[in-house]
Image (cartoon, rainbow, N blue to C red; front, side):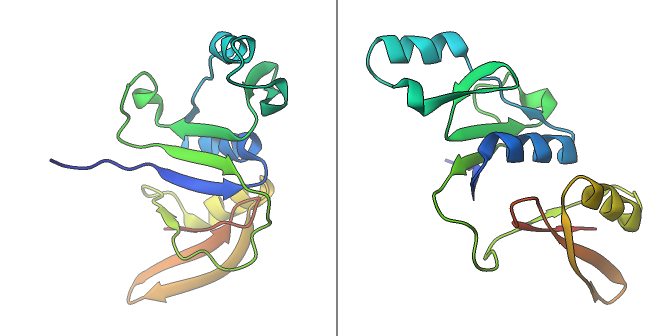
Length: 146
């Protein structure tokens, strides 16, 4: 039996960071069911302070997920990133990061686009003929583009 995973990203603003990564990867933010959320509050399983309005929609305050557009309706998506609230700021280098493959796009052009949207350039590295930029998203999580 094979196992499946999702990657969870600790952050301060999960909805804003999910929006940023969805745009970066050309993915979609998973819709949240406002009716279901309201029913959980009405039945006493949740409270109003566990929710918020994001872009006019009622959502769970502490989490947002993204996935490829073509997997948006899948009950068990193969690829999913979950952004979840943590109380502390990021303080050290990530032990795990992801590499964003540019499919032939110029990494310097993509770097500039990402910086214009709030990413930070950290450094350029190479191994043999392969070169990449290491960046940080708006909350400081490292990723590479190549």
